[in-house]
Image 1 (tube, one colour):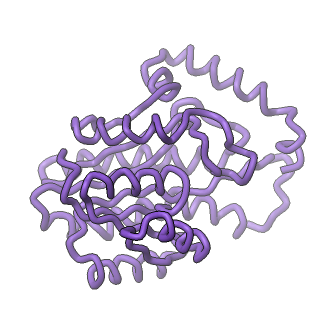
Image 2: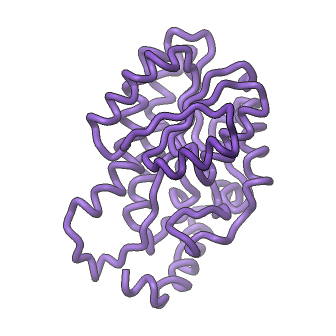
Image 3: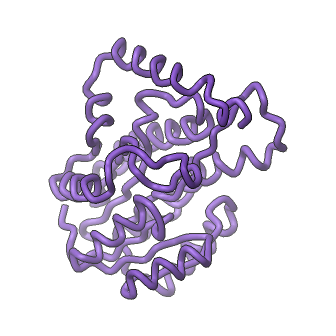
Length: 255
C-alpha cells in the first residue's frame, strides 16, 4: 500500500506509538490529523510537529465519537486511512476491584468500543477512495494474555477478533484492513514508570510502516513476531512465566 500523499487520521496521535506514527507519516509527505482528549498533549504535539492537524475528542463516549466523525467530514474530508491507536492500560487486581463500574468501563470503551465504532462509522466514507485502509492497533497480549492488565487484554483481544471479521467483510472493497501487534514498546502507556521498557519507537515504527507498504495485514515485530509464530504450548508457558513475574508485584497487589 502506498504511504505517501495520504490523508490519515490517528487516534491517540499525540503521544507514544500514535505520535511516532504521525511523525513518520508526515515525513512521508502525508497529511496527518491526530485525535486526543488532552489539551496539553495536543499543544505539546503541535509544538513538536507544526504540520500536525488535531481534533480534541473523548473517545470513551459514543456521542463524542459520532461528533468526531461528523467533524472530520467538514475539516478533513479527504481522509482515506483511519488508524485506531488510542488506548489506556491499567493494572487491575480482580481480587481487589472496588472501583465503580464506570472506572473499569472507560478502559473497555477506549480500547475496544472506540475502534469498533469508529471503523463502522468510517466505512461508507472510506469506500469512496480508490485505496483506503483501517489500521487497528491491538497488542502482543492478544497472543500471550497479560493477567495483570485484564481489561486491557480483553479489549485488545476484542479488537483482534473484530479486525479479522472486518477484513473478511471488506475483502471485496478497496479498503484494506491491517492489525498491528506491538510488543512491549518504551512509551508512557499505563502511566509514568509503568512501561519504560521494551523496544524503542525508533526501531518499531519503521518496521510497522514497511509492513503496511508491503501489504502485510498482520504486523508484528520483535517479541510479538516470536509469539505470533510460536506453538500454542510455548505461548501458554510464556504467559504463565510472565504472570509469575507480576503476580507478587506490590503495585499490582494494590491495584
